[in-house]
Length: 253
Image (cartoon, rainbow, N blue to C red; front, side, top):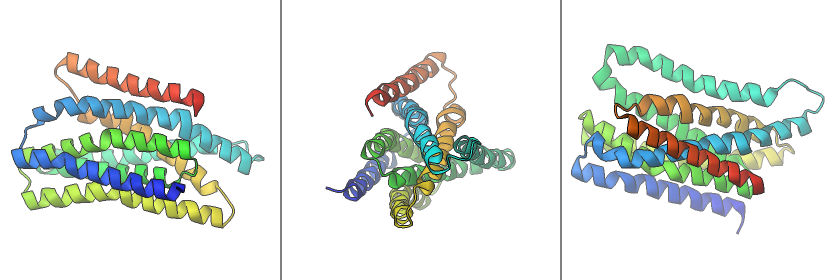
């Protein structure tokens, strides 16, 4: 089976897991407290994203730039990585103004927008990769957090008394955007090889690295603040476990 079929299967699994995760909270109208056990899984996924970004994607991007643009000594991959980080940071900084003006109404929509943008980027990162091992690692990272992120988003929308029809619309967009990203990334990957180059893949791997780094650090801290220090330490522990797992995988992959 070709890598394209594996990517299509990954898109279907990710879509199914994201939709399945919201059935229970919509039926039961759960509170934010009910999402806490799944947030340990979210912390573990953040560690995986950190690991796959810095142990796999960024080194692959640097190697590609060195191979394709060997005469250029400027750290291009690192620059693009920083741009990916700054882009999401800039979007979230802009959102703070709206939060201060209309806090109760705006928070769930800002959370949904940031998660949708990141889901598109992570889907494209999976789709654009031509290496089976790296594609599998990104799939593991996505599937490890997609369900819990979908659950947490749904609970947040319910808690802020967003109308049910709008909740369903937002959740459907969030669920579909990663498969759409996979399709876009796969198309771009095919085009890059059609035109005889891997430059596009190297650029996007570097940009996605910055995005993954932001989501696993500043974004995670902002949306998972804990009054209970014990819970916060457990989340940090699961993040480190996810990071260490990717570090071990890097020995063989």
